[in-house]
Length: 309
Image (cartoon, rainbow, N blue to C red; front, side):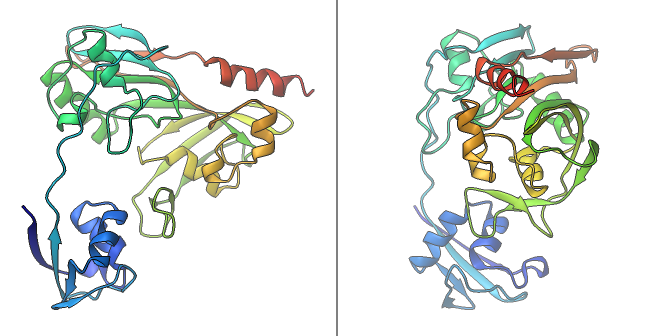
């Protein structure tokens, strides 16, 4: 059954496009909001609003929401190449391979971390949405590396709070084009959805605060290998921040990387790897840290770059 919601436009959304504003207000994707507007299910002060119309603070929105989709099913399918680094009663730490999502989502039919754990007979926390139970953080499908999943309900609560309070240490290694100047620095730039491309994110005034610290490990002729520490955890944060600096991750064609360099290095995805994850263990508070080695495609790219000298 459809649901109708009536609510005022808050001051913070004044002047924003209908699709962008309602996306923030209702937690829906801009694609869904745009479809609602096109079907006449978004009214402003009683009159239909287009997706690109501008919101005015104090006016009234009436939105007719479609019947919710059924939960995405978690399929227990073994994931080739996914290694369990550590497992105890509270957590399981895995080394996620490329081409694997953290959990099921609409439109994704490929392998998932939680589906792989289910296939291996590893029971995880039932906390969280049905399709992402136990998942306390995510890695992009095209990003490899270390990832923790909660097994106990208590661990889920503790780890979710730790990620929210930023007491978890997340370190990535990223190969970026060119040579960032300075070689050690901090990127403090807000991130939100791209104003024109719904599937991308961008540095946007008024976006969510986003902070990335980096240090150059090694400089090659065409690229630099960086150690990156996230202070915040926005979607695509590393990829967006370095793209904004005009030093996109090598192979990241979505965010402006040079396809010629990616082809020369044999890369079919962005060179980005979740190298180290550290956190206070939910059981006794001791600090634990786990590291993932480079997969073959990323290591091969570094070998090719090194041979340039």
